[in-house]
Length: 234
Image 1: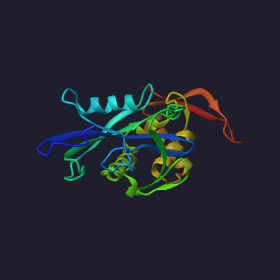
Image 2 (image 1 turned 180 degrees about the horizontal axis):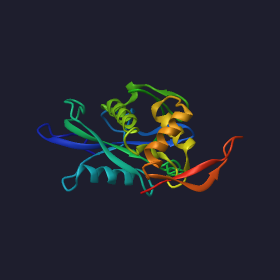
Image 3 (image 1 turned 60 degrees about the vertical axis):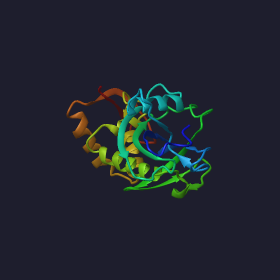
Image 4 (image 1 turned 120 degrees about the horizontal axis):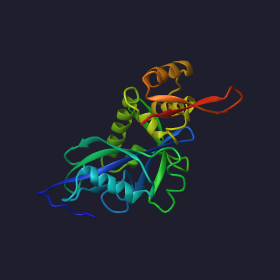
């Protein structure tokens, strides 16, 4: 689609940074391009915005087309307007961050063109590792998608402190342990957190304000005492 673009037109596209969490790892979904430009390189899922749709509508339709899932969290990330970012013509891209809950992709990738890459994060830097264990060089990413991914990681890390975005990665926000939530935060931040400090911070921010309540359920992990399970209110 749009292999050749008109030189006197401005095009608007959307690119999706689809992220998931599982087995202690933060993961990103990419597809390998089969058409020029950058054929053979890895890219974020993307499409051009139609004349009869908003950028958000285009992003949601793209997500529905790419993944057979029931729900995902979607928010606008940033608008990338660099001249020359697309060698075909003048294209600006609205980046979106899409979060699929843990377990939401169980079996869903089969039959799609998407592949999962582990993300190792450290501040704004990141490293990608494929399903075969091979590191993915940043020169193997098409367009300016390295910058989009880096922006997405920075935005995600920054929003952990003042939004509930970390809860979006949980398998079930209505039944989770603080240990599970801490694992998500550690994967996003790329570092180990102090257990006591994390627990105190989360309880002060969410339980004491009524946003999170403890249920009467528990779960046992390891040899210690059973962990209480919590529920994030709507």
